[in-house]
Image (cartoon, rainbow, N blue to C red):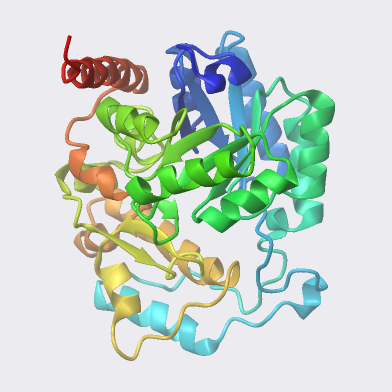
Length: 376
């Protein structure tokens, strides 16, 4: 395909797949797209193991790595001991919510202080992960929140690896262009995970026009609710050069999430997601459940800023996940995961490679349909 994304990344089809699952990354890259491994939560040693596995199984195909290095978060720039405490109110709220659904919180051990959590988000933590990533033949490095740190941009140029950055507004996109990023991932509010408020259909052409107006030619990947080839074609008609996707891979055979959540997603409609700060402290879209509803209810504590809210939510949700897989009804009800509004179109479980082929065929059909509107 004649897209600058294909040329820049050395891929056949400009479909990028963000996933925490190495199997998805490999399958998508082998099918002609590009898998991007989500590494934000891994310590350097685990990242080394995961990337070594990908190298051994991907057959030389290009793949990328995605990190989260936000420009601001609670405790940024402070010594470890100066991290804010986790309020007793939040610990009690989680314990009460779990108890209401029959989940024993006896072994939960919510930490009292932030300590080293979020170390990967600091400049030092990011540097350690970047050192690991650039020891491998990656074809892309991406930052999920804010302008990439200078070291990421420097290493990208040194190793001739394109640097991508996610944006949710026109102004953020222009700031990334001026910082020198190579690819803009323009994510609308329909997206799963961290997202803004502007819809994809508005944001993509707005950013495309703004980038053109400043004389830049930075390629754009559209993101947010895109789970089919026809949506990808629509985004490219609006100014994108390809698509960045995440949610659609969550119901594949290879995906990392548990079967209970997969079944919830396959049965969900586009109205069954909610944009909330309750999981990470920054707005992120996830599958609605009694867990998310509780944090929005009157009298609930206000979510803590990133990364402290994750200290509250993740231990509890990991336990919920484990119990739900064992058939615990209360845990099954609470179970949730990040997913975009495109979940309403995710109605069939299939392999990741098959999803890529479906995207290609649907994209071609959509383009042929549009061409059919042009008269002789």
